[in-house]
Structures are given as C-alpha cells and as structure tokens.
Image 1 (cartoon, rainbow, N blue to C red):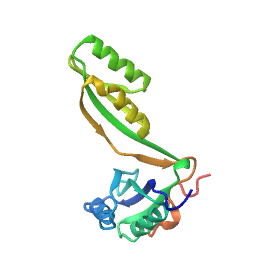
Image 2 (cartoon, rainbow, N blue to C red):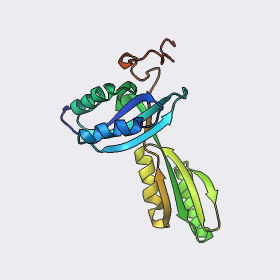
Image 3 (cartoon, rainbow, N blue to C red):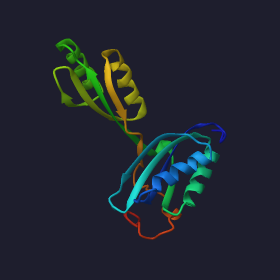
Length: 185
C-alpha cells in the first residue's frame, strides 16, 4: 500500500488520569489540522492511568508523525499505532426505537436477534437496544432500523486492543511504573 493513501488509523495512548489531559491531547490534533474521527477514553486497571483510543483519517506517514508528537506530551506514557489486521476494534451503540404496536415491536426484536443486540429497556411505546460490534455492524443495524422511527441513538466511539500477547508499545514509555504484562509468557 502507498504510504500517501489516506485511511483511518487507530492510535492507542496511555496517559495520566488527570484533569486537562484529554484537552491537551485533542488540542494537539487541532493544532496539526486533523479531525478526530472517533475518540474513546477510560480508566485502565490502574486508576492513575487512562487509555485513549483515537481514530484519525490520514496517511501512514502523518499517523506516525502524530504518534511522535503525542509522545512529547508530558502526561503521555505510551503511544502505539495499531495495525488494523492485528487488532480488535469494538464500539457500543445504544439505539431507542419507537414501537407503537406489537407488529413494530416484533420487527425490532427480530432485527435485534439477527445482530445479536441486547434489549436493555422495553416500554409500551419503545425498545432500547445495545449493540457491541465494529463500525460496519453498528452501521448495518442502524440502517435496518432506520425505517422504524429511531428516537435516539448514541455511539461510544471505537475502543481497540491488539490480538494475542501484543500490548501497547513498552519502548515508548518515559516512566517505568507500567510494567504490567511485560514479562508474561
């Protein structure tokens, strides 16, 4: 593949779990003129560390430059550009659909079953579903339910991990407190 070809690149970033860190990271993308396509942040098993998953549309060379710029930020511990063939990506989709009668309710339940969606709330007038999947799966169920009068919809943004024993790049860490999983066989 040509390095100048634009596509979605996924970056995994370990940062201090402190106020203002996400703002600092997102400002860096703004300063460089990039739009963040997807952003998900959450605390890791270490409550002092958060993991940010960022998706950005760019070419490979610029994605690597963004990683290098992120590494320069003080609250950043580690950055890794994830290989799309060797990573698992998922997104949570919550979707509330109007179901004014039993026929509509049955149709929504059938579509939910096809996509292995979980029904998380039912009322006499609506059903709320939770779907965990990649972007294509979540877009497909959204498209299938579009004619059913979607009342509300929210997507979390992509979270990603590498497959197997691969973890976020240990060599880019400036601090030594994150040795979890490093010597596991």
